[in-house]
Length: 368
Image (tube, rainbow, N blue to C red; front, top):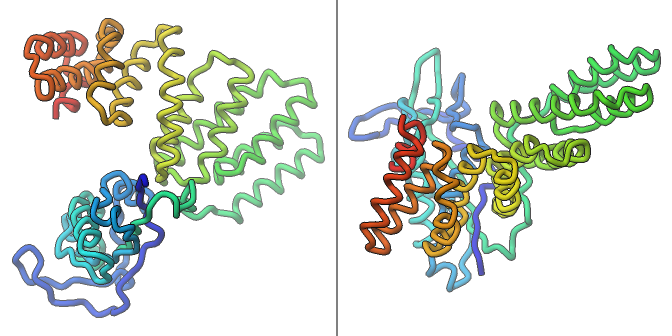
């Protein structure tokens, strides 16, 4: 069975008194979450934390063979410098699962530290990590990054409906756009604007409305984290925009980034399928930056070196047309060097990678 993992909740330690604990060799006070003025936050919020764990957790083979599943609860300290220390399992399931959960938690870094009275402090954090085999989990985990301001959203919708009843198209459009700005998970405001446009002979304005929707949702995802409720509206927007212009790839790229950023293995499959669809479309339109970038991204969905060679080697002349292609060329060079033992081809493709990116804009991050 194929495996995947998810985090279903964030928990806190019940005791509220600070503990005197040795962290990284020094005695310090470690506080509870509920004692703080500002809690620690991982980049991208809870959604970013879930995504990191999902992408880095490896289901132990011994647990898979024994069909062992369950929730491992790991307690750790988020330090004043945003790193993780004192990792310990407080609810065990199986030694192999316990060890893997602890390993991945230890990789976390970059937290915004907790604050008390304006000072950074060490904080206890407790996280449950679920190990479940694929057949036992739903396709898409139920999670959204942040709560929605439902009151502000409804106020804008009510004002928009009032303006619509007064046949004030400009004001109704403005209020509905503001409602969508508050809650970009709801397509209702945009649908109302489109219906108004169509009823008033202004359907030529619809594309700009859809473009506004994509931009607002992408902005929301960047600032708040990509919740699963972002998927339907982005798919809807991409579909509506392609009805207007079937050759427009902009909404498809926005959809791709949404798939890639959402905490769901199923959506990663959709991302891989969309990449396969976009590659020939970018080639047809001569969009070499985009072509090369998503070709490089495709690496993360291929586990067999021969599959990577089959994808990249026939297309090296196209990849070298853009600095974005240096990643794929560098990967190809590394495979021939480290896996195939062909120094001639390894040197050839690395030289092509360097020629594609002479200013070293993209190449360094792939070499790392």
